[in-house]
Image 1: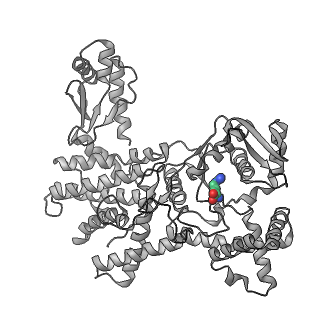
Image 2: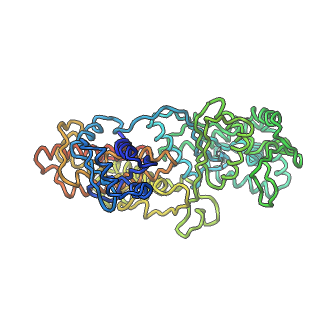
Image 3: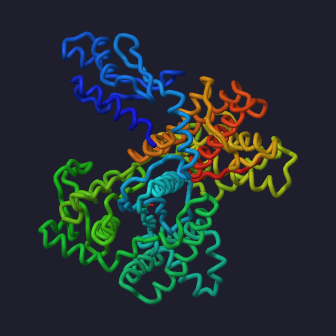
Length: 574
Ligand code: ARG
């Protein structure tokens, strides 16, 4: 059930009948109102155009609507219509939610989505910068799947670039010195740093590294064997991070840059056929209108370098080709940092010119900003290195553990461990998801782990408080039978909010802003707390007691499902 849709259908229809043009988007939620939960706007403008009095025009709309069984309507102010949902309607609609395992959220017509997210470069360990793409992308796939879409996760990891030359050359050198490779690879970050230091300081090593890239991309057995060993170790690292972060990506979602290797010459041929390729300084390039470099000269999209190597652009074009033609996706979403805006714009433009993307297909870049420290500087270690993501996750769990120790010393060590994991990881993800996707945000431990404010611990705690109501009297929430019976304004507010869950879910996928759902859950928890203060539950008599227990249960289910769609777990006690 979509409340907004229902109101839109009824009220918009009546408004259209009395000649209010563009009546589609005029019903909007009156934000903070207690009783008039919705408001129909747009009458003032229409009255001006029709040269009539707005209150008279509003009266005509009401006349059209007649006596509505669900809505109570009333003219307010200079010419608004306040819309209140009638108690019987609310009770009936809540019953619908209660009986729906999807909490009233309809499935959409099924379309195929490819979601490109996380995508670290395998040469290094995942760092804090990967948090955004990984968590935001994972929420997108969870929500799309919940809405009944077919989703293909695409982890377009970097495993084929120039950095692998140094890594392989270094592995080769260590092996020839008789070192045990697997123990050396335990700390990938250190391994990568040692290899790049050698690359910078030792010319013989650097030239060997360069030759190893060419040999690797040309299919040389020895290089491939070393490379496979490295990639296996590196993907193990990534998977450990995904598991700890409760991310739905698995090994089978990896479709790495190298997977497109065989198609790259074909891409070059096809661009050639379309007469798009131009040779510039020995490289094969595409020049398109609208792409100007920093030097004010036309900016090439380099498809093949003069040494025959294929850059990032080429593998991305091959990926577009695969997603559009082989997978036949309707929508392809790229959760990639804002700094790659130009690159992806160029990829999409060249792919369109090449005829890879059909008219019915939509490729979208959904960029995001940086994660910053409190002093607004990039999140780096003191010596300027990237902060490893595992270290951040471990710190989150440690900090949460200290909090749990303090707040609930009575829990068993096992329980504390679980709560620490769920709260610590939840806090990090929620801090990410509750911000506007496109702007930078400040990573701050104290704010994200606070039990007050718009945070994961606050919502997780709200959930446990509801569960404790049931525990107190050993009530099994699924076995409460009876009717909703709403009389108190706090009950109306809670009912309306519960009925808006579907709106919040659908709101996310318009522009993939997860903060829409976060704000919804935060509001819901707050409205629940006011309800709980205003309306006794266990001490009330029937029909109120049953009705209120049902409201508690629906709220708990909604919080649980909402957090689950954000990839955040809950516990029963904390
Ligand atoms: N591996 C890239 C990086 O770390 C991100 C890949 C994003 N996806 C894409 N299709 N280009 O910068």
